[in-house]
Image 1 (cartoon, rainbow, N blue to C red):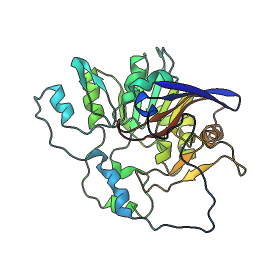
Image 2 (spheres, helix red, strand yellow):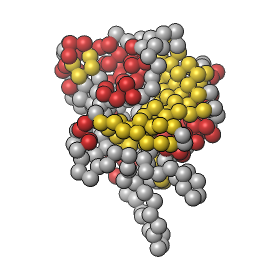
Image 3 (spheres, helix red, strand yellow):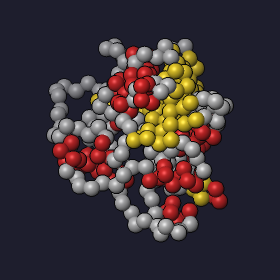
Image 4 (cartoon, rainbow, N blue to C red):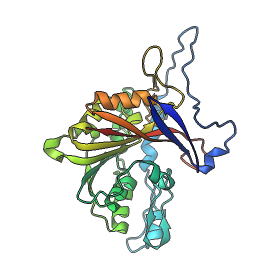
Length: 306
């Protein structure tokens, strides 16, 4: 791990870079690679809807392990988003390994007696972490990848893609292996409301806003069920802060990995304030790759208070 710090709105922001990324050629802590560059004329691109559909493969079917198979064999037979540790030394081959970053996320050490919500839980890494700290946890996610925020031209193709596997298989196996009591519910973040879901002392949402057409609407829904704090982590343009025209937000359009936007740190914090949270503090800024070979991109962890 390498760490550093830089100033933002009077805060001292901690920058944490996993060791596997420090020696990347051309990398410089505290600097990002995404910038707005003026061009002499507009350059519009007609995109390929079929390429955007590759996101449906996130939960592609694999041969299922026998019902009496051991835990390691069952883990090997499933696709994994999160790296999780199970009893007996079994570790899931997740696309993202957050374990070394947990201390930098800003989670309260003790959540005993608290009610917590994990938004877009996927395999449940953060839900199980909050439960380990003593919280009663509800986790929500979509039913299938068909339900994600695809671009308008992609939606008909997604709707006609045929039978898709249900999301949540990894979560179910993890819950069983860990002896967990986390309550997973099929629900879009847009549909969160206090009448149906109640209120939560801590709401966690990781790496979701960049995948949404309407991130502010999602934040407003999370605010409606937050009685304490929102712990939010998401992708940012590290080098961008306040610009001459406001707080930059890069529009990507949802075509690659259903990524719609990439905000500056200012924009991410401002959206939380505009959604109804009273104050924001920065916990960390870090770079996380899909694998040890990938370059990864910058993310920020912030806490928003009601």
